[in-house]
Every structure is written in C-alpha cells, then in structure tokens.
Length: 468
Image (tube, rainbow, N blue to C red; front, side, top):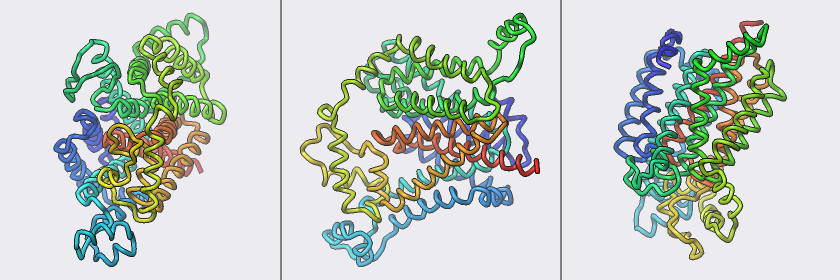
C-alpha cells in the first residue's frame, strides 16, 4: 500500500496528507474504538492540525472542492453550527421560547442563563467529535482526486478490518479468558479491539464494503486463448494483491459471524446482495468474473467457512428474537415520549444518557445509556429538523453513488461507488436497532467511505468534461 501511495500525484499534497489521514484512522480503533478520552482527544488534536495545515497550504484546491461538493459540506457544517448553538449560554427567556422543557430545568436551578443542552460538557465533547468527522470528510474530498487514491483508501480499509478481525477471532479461538485490549471477560462473542460486539460487527461491515469495492476495481476483462493460458493465469493470480484481499475478506466474514451480531450479519448480507445485484443489472461493462466473485463469497464464506465458526448460532439468535425477549422496543417507546419534549431543538448533542433517567420506565431491564436506535437518538439530541438535514445528506450520498455506479465505465470508479453504497445501506439498517454512530472509529470510517463515494463522483464528472 505504501508503494501505491508513492505513485499518487503530489500536486495537491495527496501522498503525504493521505498517509497522515490513514495513519490516524489506523490507530483510532485500537483504544477501544476511540472510547478512551485521552487517546481520542490526542488524535482529534492531530487531525485538526493536519486539516489546518492542508487547508492553509492548498487553499485554492480546497475552494474548488467546496464548489464541487457544496451541498453535502453545507449540510454537514450546518450540524456543527447547530451543536455550537446548543452549547452556547443564552438568556433563560430565549431558552424558554426555544425549548420550554430545557428552560424549566434551568429555572428550577435558579439560573438566569442556560443553554439548549441539558448536558453542556457532553455537548462540547460531541462538538469535538463532529468536527473531527467533518475534517475527515473534507480531507477525503480533497485527497480523493484520482483512481489510485481511491484504491489506496479501499485497500487501507481492508487491512484495518483484517487485523481487527484476526485479533477478535484469535481471542475467541485461543480460549483466552480476558481480552488483552480492555481487560474484560471475552465470553463467546468476538469483539476485537471494541468493547461491544455489535460495534465490532459494524466496523467489519464497513471494511467488508471496501473489500467488495476493491474487488470490483481490480476485476479483469481478460480473454484467454486457451485452457493452458487460463490455468497459468489462475496459478499466478495467487500472487496478486487481490488474492490476498480475498483471504482478508474471508477472515473478516469469519470474525463477523463470530460476533454473533444479528443485525450486523443481516446488514452485511443484505447490503452485499443488494449492491451486487444492482451492479450486475445496471452497471456498464460488468466483468463475468464479478458474478463468480459474489457467488463464491456467498457459498464459500457463508455456507461453508462460516458454518464452522458459529453461523448456526447467529441463525438461532435471529429465530429467538421477539418482543417478549427484547427490551429495545420499550426503550423505543420511552424514547418517543422523551422526543415529545424536545422535538425542535433537541436535548443537546451527547446529552441522551443524562436526560434518559427521567424517562426510564419500570419495564426496562438492565442498564441502557443509549437509545439503541440512532435515528431516535439523533432526533432526541439534535431535534427533528437536524435529523431531516442529515437525512437529506444521506439521500444525496445514496443518489450520487448509485448514479456513478450505473453510469461509469471505469471499474475503479465503480468499485469506489459500490463500496460507499454498500456501507451506507448497511449502516442505515444497523442504525435502526443499535448505536454504531456513537463510536468515533465507526463514525470516522463511515465518513471516509462517504468521501470515497463523492470522490468517485468528482473523478467521473471530470472525465466526462474532458471527453466533451
């Protein structure tokens, strides 16, 4: 991968800054997926500096990027502005008008000034996280200006997912009682460097999406003159990078199954099949080998290899799922009651855990600090209008990547678009029953994949202009 980075054009500082960005993202999942405060804060500071230096050095290029991708950038930046407004101290009279429930909480404390957030420290922390995601998105848009940069990013995601998957599977298969990373009991479900097995599964979903994209980008249209030539090419293909990537995908699928995450596995298989079918039906110049790849992934990875590593247990967990055995439906009901009091301005980014105890019903068993539904939690913390803004952003990303996937004749651009589309579809599914975006590592990798999709769009657009 380092040799590939060296060949990237350096006219916009791509090589060195892409290396710095990927180095930050490589380290981010290791400290419990970015949950450790000191590690996350140090990493965010480094990321801010990288973005600032790049922006000052290549400001004309940044301006061109902003003009090209103004809509997603404006939508993203609007969320940052809103978090600042939630955090700023305001006269209590203004808070009463904008959010009566929040104003009442500050009035009970006898304060003349308050904020729209019920938990200002948590909102400030959410602001830092969101700003780091914006930096990743902006840097990605600026750096993904050619096909080689896209391939390097996809290959990086595959490598990042593989080392985490290998570690997660190894801990379970080796019979270690305690995790080396977070010093807790391993149990029987793989979690890698993450504390929560569902976070681990979602992280692998994103990296597997990049793997699919990389394979599309490197598929061959070669026609062999004889069977001997075909066998010879097949033999030497074992030494190619994509053969190693194929092994990496198998390792990640095994680890995903070993997480026993119901929605993690479901989201992966549904998004994989959906994007593959769409590409085969509507894509241009789709190699026949792509069909072989998808079928082999489903047969070998799912029905053969994964059967040895707990696929049956995942199926049993899905069959046993019901409203009688789950608490998340009750959390959803209580969360909707909470939303009724903060529909427009929200309770404050990151304030869900603080405000949740007031609305917790007796029917809920166990300790819930999150809504286990990112749509609901975003609405509660940010308000419904901001949730709509984010929805417009995601719909625009889906439309953009789908359009590129269907129109491009360049398989490298198609691979980048497919990776972004698969990751987005998988995330939309997993967000409905869990909290993947709470974790910095997952949010950062998801934002990077969104930037990869938009990067593919800008490259395809530039090619179309040059062809005219």
